[in-house]
Image 1 (cartoon, rainbow, N blue to C red):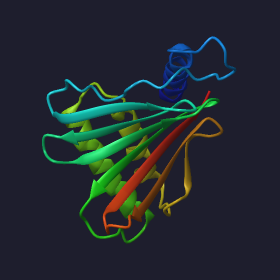
Image 2 (image 1 turned 90 degrees about the horizontal axis):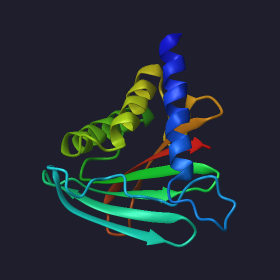
Image 3 (image 1 turned 180 degrees about the vertical axis):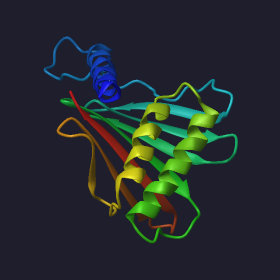
Image 4 (image 1 turned 30 degrees about the horizontal axis):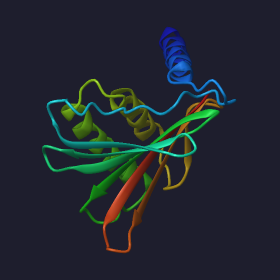
Length: 172
């Protein structure tokens, strides 16, 4: 019971801090302006580009020194949302649980490259989702009911490149 309370308190403190960071004076959004979650100077990062977009959105394009390429999409006003989008060269997953496990391994590579990134706490929630039950791609997987959730999907782009998308959304 104490562990569950600790998680709720940690997430509440985290979302409270995020909601005030970079907050514009003239809007009604609870969430602050997007900020990079990947440290461009971390030892395992080869390339990093951060671009702010309209409507409180941003995108980070990252290449790790081990070659993994991914993007982080930032979004939300009443929600704090991040989507990690990994470019992979593996075959399509057999099912949702396999896809979630593959995403967890990709996040582990990111955490190894940038140990202080936000991905470390996200990885713990993804690993918890893997251990809970089987999920299908596109399912909303609650982390804390009514407060935060994960959505895992995959797609192949027009060039035939496979992408795994792992969205993490927290209601503020």
